[in-house]
Image (tube, rainbow, N blue to C red; front, side, top):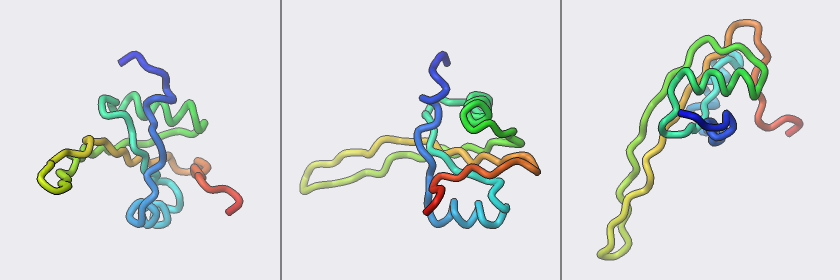
Length: 100
């Protein structure tokens, strides 16, 4: 896959579950929505270059888009991929909302 590293990470996936995971691990685990075709190696390289941290491991999960209806019409939301990135011990945590 020959793409820009900024195209691999879509945006941080901030939910209640991902926030609890981050708090439980002292800021070492962060969740991102990523490009569907991105591999763990591509995700690791992108996070290390963009945020200047060292990544210990990457866990990924694929999600199928939900079927939605409006009257008789049916459609499907797009499928997507999520990555949980675990930083090595002693690394600064990745902050999305600094100064809030």
